[in-house]
Length: 143
Image 1 (cartoon, rainbow, N blue to C red):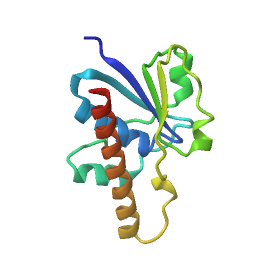
Image 2: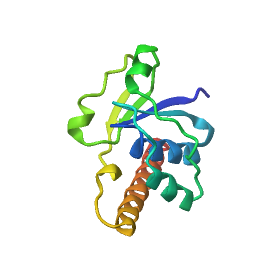
Image 3: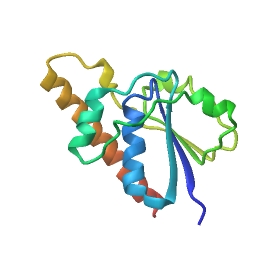
């Protein structure tokens, strides 16, 4: 069976799209080729790296990519899933041949303010919501 190609997109490819990519790789097994990118490639969020390690996933060596580089390279995807806010998702390029474009909106951990523990807790909540969304999507695909 041919693997489905999935691209997760957020603003800087520093948090939400990285988490979604990691969870789909974990739960989707060999069924998918998964990548993530940002509208403007940024720097990997160290809080996200930390909370992902808490659930046994090391993304510390991941790099951030620019979605427009993927677009210019002519990459094709079966699913393009935006995980940023709706207004930012509208800025994403339309990839030719995409069979489905989905939007899963999550708060941006880079915007969280407060003490270290508060930021960690809010980032964990986003992580857990992304994990549940990935699992739910996989269950729906199997129906």
